[in-house]
Image (tube, rainbow, N blue to C red):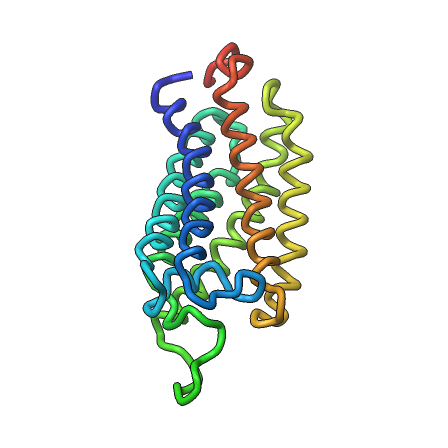
Length: 215
């Protein structure tokens, strides 16, 4: 594996770890924050405590995902298809979701505050949906390319499983985004594809993968 390929695979581990660490750390700094019910992106809202922690998590995951997608495309060569490109789109959308922050930490306005949200919050919501869709479809598109790879082939079915689980949870989440318990549901939904990303990145870094260099 080339140096750039190894760096890209390392990013596939560091991005998910950084993002997960960010929301775990940020939620501990919030007074009266209900992890079970409130969204991860609320931790980067304008009224959040130390929102830069979660904003940095979004940026780290987004940039790392783009670099990882590029390394994955080079690793798979002509068989890559559109899967890595869609994963890269998910990375760009993650950066946008962190840059365009929510108006408030809570899912509901405080007493006396007006209903509705700003256009910045609208862009955040659109970026979050786009990122989730691109990542899910990207995993589905990636599965055939993985199946044809002698080293990564056994990860094709886990890729489809991660995509299916994420799609199902997302559909339920989006039916009512402020449903009680959606905070935990969202964290599960986010974690599933990130765990697969780490698993794939570690395989790319393994000695077995090195023995079959990029083609």
